[in-house]
Image (cartoon, rainbow, N blue to C red; front, top):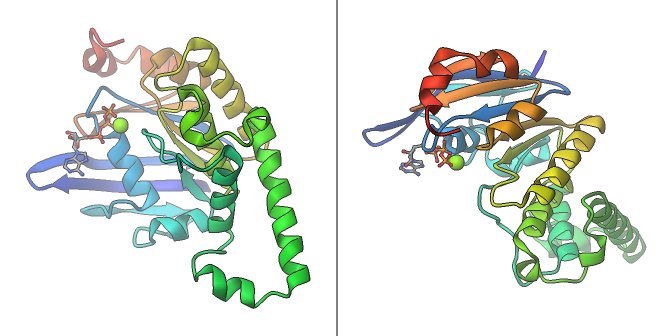
Length: 257
Ligand SMILES: Nc1ncnc2c1ncn2[C@@H]1O[C@H](COP(=O)(O)OP(=O)(O)OP(=O)(O)O)[C@@H](O)[C@H]1O
Ligand SMILES: [Mg+2]
């Protein structure tokens, strides 16, 4: 069974059809790429999958369950987590605090207000929960190679490390499906290689990955399968080697690769 199914999703903004009847699926353990020229509808598709946008028509299934009407937060709690094309970190907070906050959110600590949740716990169990959260946050920081930046404010980190921290924030929620929107955007080649290694490690830990990527060499190198969008429509799908030689894909990208 597919972990994620997008069934004939359409997203219109007024007169503009940003995504048109797109169908795709992602199976457990896969790394799937979503590519296409600027404005093809990739981020809009992510917004629909992650619940930031309600599709004009069509549906989203996660583990066979229809989640089309589920808010983003509830999707995160069932294991659907995404990163953003632009960083959404808390700039004044440290790297560790950013990870801790995401962990708390995913564990429901703040959803009903801190006071409510913490007052229902004894001091002892609250401390144990906090210790466990801290230890998990440190593990994530170490996994993304930023333990040496633990106490640095997110906004003071170089761009590549901010992007990496964004991935760490997503990982700290314990995703089953990790959706990455241009994870190597604006990175140096060295930084991009680190992210590619990290994506492989994430998959080796049992997390399924759906990624949007502009850099064709990156996406073709890393993905098991690829979907190509152009003007909101799916124009090709298949293994990277198949898609790269597809005439419609070549035309869509002509002069852009
Ligand atoms: N909230 C919105 N309101 C109106 N139009 C939008 C909105 N979001 C996206 N669009 C439009 O939908 C189309 C697809 O945009 P989208 O951001 O999904 O493309 P993309 O493939 O992610 O592009 P890029 O590679 O530049 O990130 C574009 O024409 C964009 O201007
Ligand atoms: Mg985009």
